[in-house]
Image (cartoon, rainbow over all chains, first blue to last red; front, top):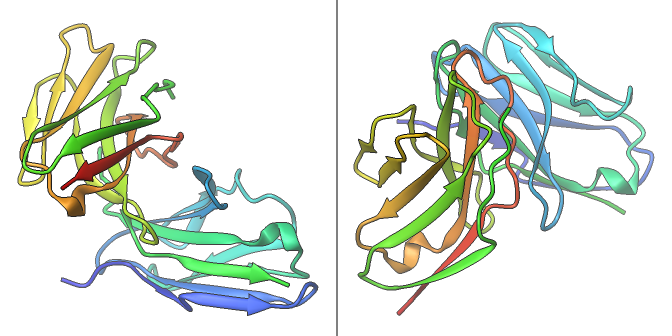
Length: 114
Length: 111
């Protein structure tokens, strides 16, 4: 069946521009997560959605980062006024939510800020 | 969440069993052990998880010690496609709002 889909797969943009990254979770998965991974590093948690609400935004690094989820499905991560340190792979995962539900990841969006 | 410790790298001959250890000596009673792997340029892939009993699925086996302070992921017949970074994670039973991926073990399967 279809897995987690992320778009675009690669994004190159100039410093100061805004970017939007999209995540299509697995159908029926109520929980959705955003992480980022810098080169050679582990994953850094950004935000968690249960349905359309975000009970845990603790990982968002600054107010330039925001995310929304509509219809309990697609999510968009927006980065405003991008900086070079925002360059990373942004990964989305989804799960059935609740008790002991493994997260299933997309292949990420590789964001490069020039 | 409990911290986990893994060796930074391991090699395994193709066709042999790969045994990847993980220490989680501070794991609490409601924390499960999860294993994920990440192949180059791909997102992490869920492998298996367990609480205290040994578990097996089509990908791997998970052996958890009786005191739950350590575990071993076993890939019974490693192939070149199993070359990846393997992450051991201890996460609570409910929700696991975020998973803490450390630096993992880089497994190289050698022809």
